[in-house]
Image (cartoon, rainbow, N blue to C red; front, top):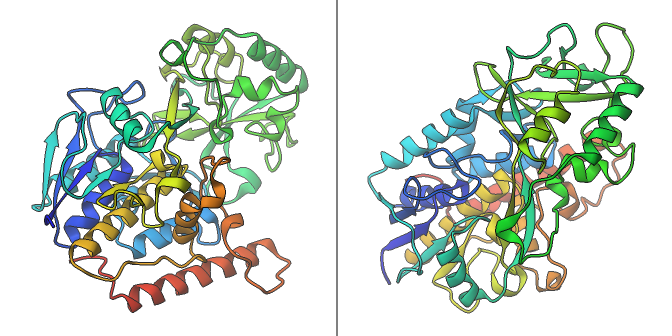
Amino acid sequence: MSGTVNVIGAGLAGCEAAWRLARNGINVRLYEMKPKKYSPAHHYNGFAELVCSNSLKAARLGSAAGLLKAEMELLGSLTVPCAKENSVEAGGALAVDRERFSDSVTEKLKNEPLIEIIYEELAEIPDGITIIATGPLTSEPMAETIGRLCGEGLSFYDAAAPIVTYESLDKEKVFFASRYDRGDADYINCPMNKEEYLEFHEALIGAQRAELKDFETHPFSVYEGCMPIEVLASRGVDTMRFGPMKPVGITDKRTGKRPYAVVQLRRENREGTMFNLVGFQTNLKFGEQKRVFSMIPGLENAEFMRFGVMHRNTFINSPVLLNGDFSMREHPDIYFAGQITGVEGYMESAASGIIAGAAAARRIRGLEPLKLPIDTMTGALSAYISDPYNDGKFQPMGANMGILPDIGVRIRDKKEKYTAYAERAIASLKREMERVSYESDR
């Protein structure tokens, strides 16, 4: 058995897999097609590029996203420490400066002597143990190879939100605040009255959408977690007010009252020169985005540094194909990691890379497999994507407390309950790591 592992793709999952293997003393060939070739959604030449949002979701331990990141750190994550080092203010969330975060991850991998980085687009799977982390926008040649290996894939659409400059905002119409005044006032709020909201809603649902020419052969299916704002608006006049434009917990600093609706902007970079429109993923034509989104109070003269885009994502039928350690049942030398497996979200993808990398390293070294407890977030996600029961109804799944087994004790307070879930998970993961002598670093 070869002592070198191939990792295809330097996204979040591929970076974590390569790092975990190297930190366990295993040689790695990390293949990345950028900068020679870019997918429709990627633009930066660094590794671990964040495409849709710069938020890695909640930071507190008593949340699904916070628990996942805590478990990842225990398992020796590369991306979580890099995210913390390059964070930007985002209230209770962990958000990052995209370019600095990417540069940090890239630098660490380039400086790791056991990792050989090969800038090449692969069309075939190399011989030997291989982790496929090519992401939901796998290039066509590799996608065809994966299709032959796995059978027909499943597809849905994903979208990204626009980014505007801070200096172009009308400061007389917007204000900084966080919902319920929790933490620092890190979000820019654009309040709307009823008349403004209704006019905006009408313009949004009537705006022209961009054609999805590259994906005409695939049925139009939108994943709920990245619902384009215009699709959400088309479901009813008040849907946005119960979604990304909900005014609950926000007080207009000028009037002292709650607005009818509010658009929030989150810091995009550390300097605070750019902000993204939270929850405003879109597939509108660029000119329409400028016209309609400029109707938002404070954005009348906004300078758009990036318009929203939509692209197709692909994932394999993991419940039929994969084990809980992300290895293939029929081809145990091949592992998958990242969104292509059906885990949804940045950190979920990164976590799957850690698991696949750790599993491959332990296999090469003849060690007992790491069996992630089902009451941990990493274990629950691994179980979800590998459960044959999900065959036929498999859809992407992100970290959430609902996939964890019941704690068995009635706790009425939601915050206390989720904290108890998190404490149980951390203790359970530590016991398993101690049981198998898991090495989080060499």
